[in-house]
Image: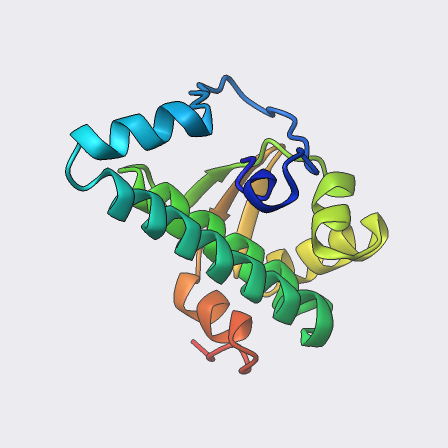
Amino acid sequence: MGLNSLVAERYNSEARALETTSVCEVPFERYEELVEHTPGLQYQMLKIMSQEINHHQEMMLLLGKKRAEERLASFFVNLSRRLESHGQSGVELRLSMSRSDIGNYLGLAEETVCRVISRFENESLISTQRRIVRLNQLEQLRAMSRGGPAIAK
């Protein structure tokens, strides 16, 4: 958050926490001092920046070329991957975002998000209970997120 301010010298973004969140502010001048005394810090920052670039490239592809089903499958797969990387279950997801927020994020109408979620449920790819989504067929969702058809059982 805020990395784009290094070039623009002003903040062009904002964030809204959907859950309890911890934030650590590091002014750039302080970061430069820390890099001098902390081996590996610069590499870690470059790694984070690289992840951000990859994420933005994926979002451009997602918004520009993927169908609604592929977008929502990608959303679930990416959320699963992020949770697993933090040692949490990648199969049972607690959605903090409303259907409307998911639609805004994916460039879809809320009605489309609801329709695709219902279709995924009818095909047993997922099951939902309020804001809990269980990914019953994660491999099929992965294939769909890459633009391929869902793998038959």
